[in-house]
Length: 256
Image (cartoon, rainbow, N blue to C red):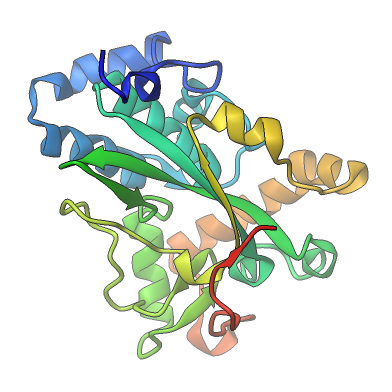
């Protein structure tokens, strides 16, 4: 037994042994790959085969994210962790909050003013080569990101439309054995690392309030997903973009 064995275990959210998760890994033949390639295969699948979009909640099982076919930072992280653990790759979750400005342009303008100032957020840390590598660049699928790059051509620093980067033309989103990032400059607070998403959501919840939470699950997220689909389809005119802007000052702050 190694020190990382506990970082391979399944949980309610990391339902590694669920049929769809198990069948995906077997059908793709990922277990026959080397460690570097296994990480890359799972990462690329979650990045591009699972499109950027809003699920009904953060704390849903990996198999539900897979069935939805779309996800955001937290739900995509859960799916990536389940795939990595199914492939024998130790991984953990790093929790943060992000400034809500990062969601401007995706959140409808009518409800943006009443959204929480900070949004619960996470990335995956994978054990590779004896180090912990940060994986966050899987959040936006390539088709969506390329549309933003075209709409904001000439702009390197952006904190809106699901992006938080100062390298928009060439963000580090490709798995090459090192960290990947696409929302990092929007981080507000560091909440620490967690062995599982179950542990994270057991300690941290998005404080929407009952009414906003109900509206989000039933109305607002569908509205947001429609806006994401429109952007992915190229319906984002550079001259009519609402809410482009640089990341808030201050960088990462440690939680008290």
